[in-house]
Length: 187
Image 1: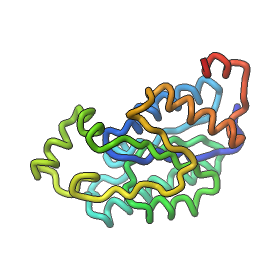
Image 2 (image 1 turned 90 degrees about the horizontal axis):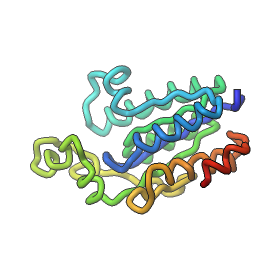
Image 3 (image 1 turned 90 degrees about the vertical axis):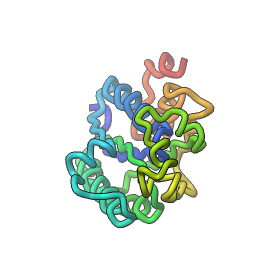
């Protein structure tokens, strides 16, 4: 396998910022390199691992801590974990960071207006009209990371460019070997 040391790549940001899209591109590249990888997507985890949790602050923290628990198990067993979850509160992200030694926080940053424009599910429209209470970025806070390992400005770069920057950071941090194919990846 390409990586013997696991890691958790934690994508955080508003709904519609591009977390899942970038995570999908990163996952494909990691698999092509022979990396053992698992993706923990916030929506999928909520359906399977956190069913029954609401969107109160306490429930959101519980959800993030559950994702972090699973990510830690996988990471310490040599798996590259790609987490794509809003994870709005600094407190819960910091708790996860303390538990996972090989933790890389990636802030997927896009202005609220851009996220609302990209919203294919119509969630922002419902949040602005009051149909969805406690919606992150509208009626519930999003606490942006103060010092993430990487910030992706998704209103300024394509998902492919963002994913390339993530892969380059993993190489720089020693989680991935730089290979000859990287020249093709870097364009």
